[in-house]
Image 1 (cartoon, rainbow, N blue to C red):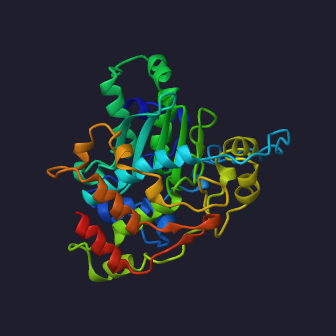
Image 2: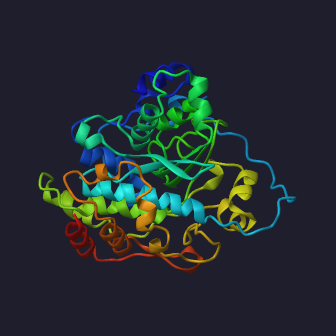
Length: 364
């Protein structure tokens, strides 16, 4: 629906085409999601198509100048990120429902910033639709355009609507989705884990340029954990060695935190996250700590998400096709299977993949 407008921009934006669209083949479960989560899972494997390299478009991949020195006039304060963690928890819940429905657990919610209303959600639909372009962001955008009578509206009218909208997505948008967000005029983006193969907000390319800010690392362990759970599930059609290899994913150490300088400048990071997090996370990847709602303190996912919060999601029954909604059960399952994040953002991993698998099966 929205793709034709994006594809019209490919030539003018100098975007390598094999970065824009992930492989839309029917073998989605074994290739599409795994390529998306190479860094997240810690497992590398051969791919159907080779990733782009900087040599393919030197101008487009040219690194931006190093960000300016920190403006020391910024107030030294501890910034509460609780709102962003609670909103991202909604996206994690939607991703969990996608996992239960047999999809790659990547999901997003679009939030109207002034009112904190959930406008729409999106989750990966590539397996069901056999369409490699049905990413979470496009599903959510289409829902908003349709519900607000913006289909066929002028770019200015669409941008006027989206300037007050914030996207929370569990995995960094790919280049295709990053460009879509640019063209609708999204206000701001928050994501969980980096997309090492196709990341369009800075990991591979910063496709949006300066059109919107994108901050990563919010509920990153949870986003990674859901992807890992996707790969430890039995796949009757997969060769036995592949199943064993995928199960070995669980319990591996998480990759180092993001290189935040790829996504925002020092000043942008400090203004959003605070000077304390700037010193702890910005200058190099932090090997042992994650962002948390309160600097230096751990958190419990159960305190970020309630039944009342989930009921804010529009069209919630669609996440339970043919089933009764059991939000409380799903929240409790998430709390059981997600990693624990203790003081100073240190992640504690559960090492028994079979136990996680049983919990997921019992909740289905």
